[in-house]
Amino acid sequence: DAGITQSPRHKVTETGTPVTLRCHQTENHRYMYWYRQDPGHGLRLIHYSYGVKDTDKGEVSDGYSVSRSKTEDFLLTLESATSSQTSVYFCAISESPTYNEQFFGPGTRLTVL
Amino acid sequence: QKEVEQDPGPLSVPEGAIVSLNCTYSNSAFQYFMWYRQYSRKGPELLMYTYSSGNKEDGRFTAQVDKSSKYISLFIRDSQPSDSATYLCAMRDQTGANNLFFGTGTRLTVIP
Image 1 (cartoon, rainbow over the protein chains, first blue to last red):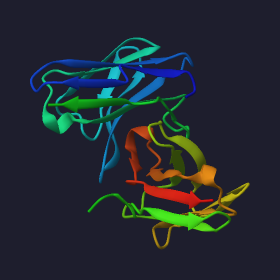
Image 2 (cartoon, rainbow over the protein chains, first blue to last red):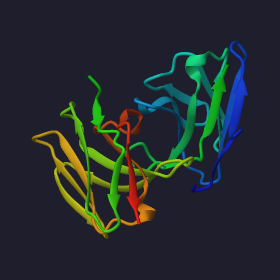
Image 3 (cartoon, rainbow over the protein chains, first blue to last red):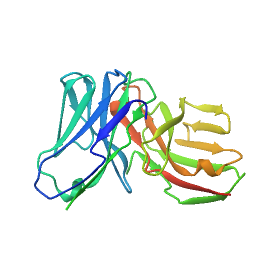
Image 4 (cartoon, chains in turn green, purple):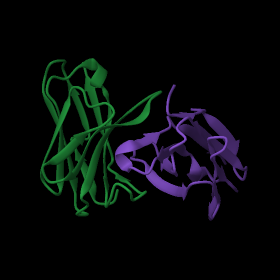
């Protein structure tokens, strides 16, 4: 998975609790992305980062926040988890937004009860 | 209407068959077209990408883009059991990967 790790790999939590997912890369790529993957919807972009402390919203950003204090780490936070946020979350990295290959991490399976 | 439509399958074929996977799209601004393969419980990995219209071949895989019909295809020749996976199409316009749209994926099983 091109030097990308995600933690935790699995998490079960309750509605209303905060959750933070971590993406860590060893490739030194500038661009990092958080997606969620749901049946019938495919992969949808939540937030992305184009550098340390530089982030922007994607298609489905409501209820999520992100932070990037170091090149190698990109955190996704659900401030107050809801059942609609049950999903598989993937982190991806790329050298450039116009570079056609994104490298994906192994995913985090999140269940919100 | 979704930006990208992809038949979810599942598709089951015998080993050695030719497989055709397809996506349609609505945004005429899309210029870059990609196919990702995703094995069960793994992240997607890029198989091929093409720019604008035309064909591109890589081993047993051929990608085709018909922009006039807003239709893209991935052909797999001499399919192998190791090709069993979900195939995702993805596409974007000139602005970059922050506007990358994925299909829902087609699940393929190649039976030995």
